[in-house]
Amino acid sequence: KSNVVLIKIPHLPKKVMYPYNYSMNKKIILFNELIESISKKHNVRTMDFNITETDLFDGVHLNEEGSKNTGRQLADFILKDKGIIKIV
Image (cartoon, rainbow, N blue to C red; front, top):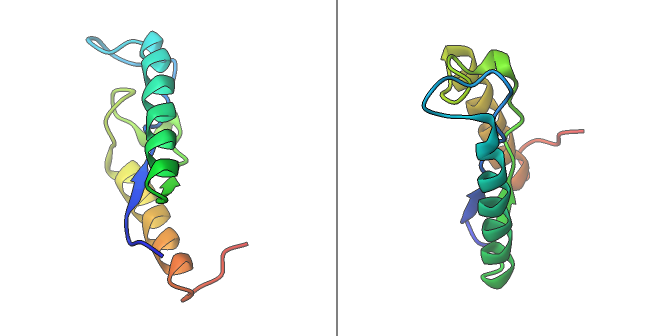
C-alpha cells in the first residue's frame, strides 16, 4: 500500500467572502474529478475532509477549530490506515 494520499478540495459553504464566491464549487468539482482520475491511474487513495461553516473564518480558510478538526481527521485516517485504531 502506498503512503501517498490525495486530498480532495472541500466545497465552499454559502457564506464565502470576497474574492471567493460560491460558484467556485463548479471548479472544485472538476478539480476533485481530476484528483479521482489521477488516484485511479496511479493506484493511490483519496481522502475527503468533513468541514462545516464553523470550521472556516471567511468561508474558505480554516480557523483554529477547523485546523484542529481537519488535523484530527487526518490523524484518524493515518492511524486507521496503519491498523492502529479502528474507526466505526
